[in-house]
Amino acid sequence: MPILILTKRWITSFKMSKDLHQYYENQVESALFKRNEAQKKYNFVAVIRIFFFVGAVVATVFVADKINIWLGIGAGFLLLTLFAYLIRYHQQIGWQKDYYTYYKNVCETEIFRLKGDYKKIQDTGEDFISTQHPYAYDLDLFGSTSLFTTLNRTATIKGKHLLVKWLSKKVEIPTIKRRQSAVKELAPLAELRQDFQSKGMFHKGSMEEISNLLKWVNTSASSLHTPFTKIIAWVLPILLLTGATTYFVLDNIPAIVIALPLTLNILALGNYRKTITALCEDTVKSARILKTYVALFKALEQAPLKSELLAKIQNKVNVDNEKASKAIQQLGQILFNLEVRENAYFAITINLVTLYEIHWALALEKWKVQHKNSLKDWFEALAEFDALQSIAGFTHLNPDFKHATFSETPYYYEAEQMGHPLIHREQRVCNNFKLEGQGKTILITGSNMSGKSTFLRTLGTNSVLAFTGAPVCALKFCLSPFQVFTSMRIQDSLEENTSAFYAELKRIQLLFKTIEQGEPVMFLLDEVLKGTNSKDRHLGVNAILKQLFEKNCFGLLSTHDLELNQLADQFPAHIKNKSFNSAIVNQQLHFDYQLHDGMCHSFSASKLMEGLGILGEGTVD
Image (cartoon, rainbow, N blue to C red):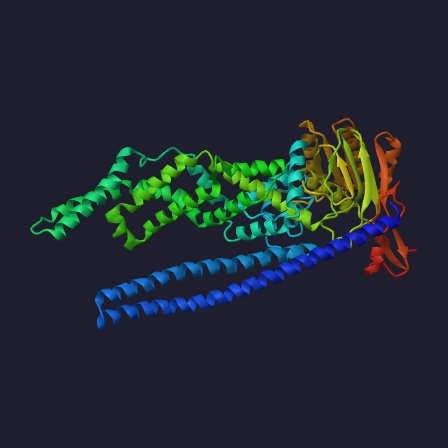
């Protein structure tokens, strides 16, 4: 590509980055201002609440004592009612204050990503690191500076796990194309996405809380769910209240009219206590997070969505005019009311008289019957939207990235001006690349630090992005469906008593097992068999490549062993030589990180050792 076009692309990319940085700076400033205004209001209402409470007490006592007792009680009731309203209003302001704090944090995190300062991002996904995965460990899918940290903006725990699944496993091309369309629609809706992410920060909860809720909704009805329970839940409290009224209003009424129904209430509560406790253990812990999910479902229901996949997701949470947010809100209220039963004073008063916990346990069972077929679909729809809006945030932050197209020709990979998405655009060096055909292999040679490993990761990482439905770091990108497999970071293991060389052989064995599963594979092998001598390495690489030529795969193999370039002469129909080179400019080692045809003719190890004082100055010509 001409230098002029490359320069123009870099200038355009820089301007886009600058504009985005200014946008997020403005968003942070606006959120901070609104947060401070909410804090002032929050503090003011806190003081007013105290005055109303004290005023209610004083007014009640003074008016009742000096003027009229009923007037005093009325004044006190009015002021306490206003006090209760202020408590609710105060909580709403507190929510706004926290919301703007979270909104500010969301926008600040985007600024960290724009700067490439990934280490300031707290959720690194390190729990998902697996050395046994076909490519996750080698391609830095998870960890402090990883594909996950630049992609993940999920607001829910299930959305996060779904995004991890998408990164870890390829799907069919039609599914990827539907994701691409959804991401393109969501990408410019920055404030919608930031609002969604901010609301999710109130309480993400844990996977266990949601899993327990979904398990509960699929269980059969408990022993509570019978006509007899419904009858006694209403009849016994009525008998108790009737008996108490009769006893206190009429004269010479025996105490048994209270004692008998009270005893029956105690027996009823005791009989169902174990069942209700088990019910609460499965569900009540979820009550704290459901308020957050109500806000998220509302945001999804109200979003202006049109693409096929997004419309399908939205329809799932709006089935037959039944909104998921309303049903989840009802569930949250039921669980909150059941949680109150744990209060000892409440248990021996209102619960004892009204059989409160039985009523709400019945309400919970009724809710389950009505919504058991929908709850799982609702959470799955929300998680899918969450994962898509997360990728859309990545798309918005990288407007110069392009979505992949897919070739019907198998074993195909072509990219124009492709770079590594985790390298900051100011330091990123891009390359053109094409590889086509079953069994075709590119052998990349180059000196130390010349860029071989980074280039392999660039190929793999962009493939993962493409198969996820995210845009890739390239001007043009076309590939066929395949399974990525890498062998790069091979280490010995004291725990398993395994040498690095043996660990690499096990990795190569895993490659062949992956290929045998039938799906086309693109392999990316870095410094193959570096743990053995040259003779064994040549024999080993020769044997490995001969097998790969005949299998359903294609890929790249890098090495700094220049003698392996002779394999291209030995197998010209299958192997091409490419290289990364270095040069000494003004006595300094210089790398251009550009992919060249042919074998490498430059070396860097001696110059690096000289620079570190290991070799004497002037040793290297």
